[in-house]
Length: 116
Length: 113
Image 1 (cartoon, rainbow over the protein chains, first blue to last red):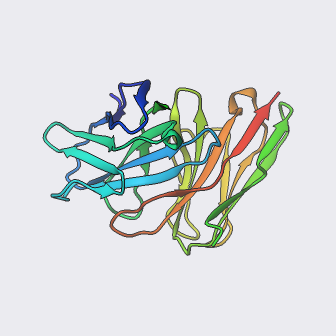
Image 2 (image 1 turned 90 degrees about the vertical axis):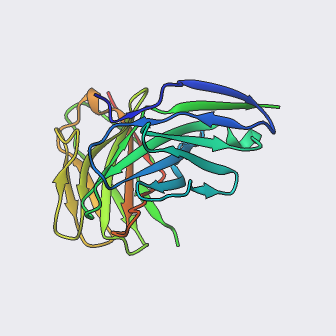
């Protein structure tokens, strides 16, 4: 079974609208972390936001927020007021455990296109 | 700070040739990682190093070797390149803190003919 599932291969949104990118995860660990990365067409991987499994509040970073629903094992990325520069590939990733030896498992990504 | 740097940016190899991808970070991170990215596959971990002097296999280690030269540098070697190793290779590093956020280099595009 996939550990990280991103069911939306592509999403379209108009500029200034909000958009939600879906991510569900599968783990039996109690301690884990969830990450979102952005990959623009230039290719670099840019860290956006982090949510720890014990964090009670949803993480926010500027226009990015993470809708964390632990019981449903979902960690959706919400981008408010989309901008043309938000057009990119977005990856959800999970870190299981917290030992210093833990690694990331990535989903296959969602391509977001923002239109004027 | 340059963050994570990778060389070369692009490389073309013939089947059977060898090469080493270089990675360096200036963030004083303990952990370093090598991933490959193939179309439709997301990123997959090849090898990682939790600290200087240690390396461990990831999900797809076959055909690769790594060296953690010192705390800053982590290299990936292809001894005998195969067309299946055509990919984009990313190096990343992280602190061993609560989040362990990984920060990525710009990537190396490798084409094996």
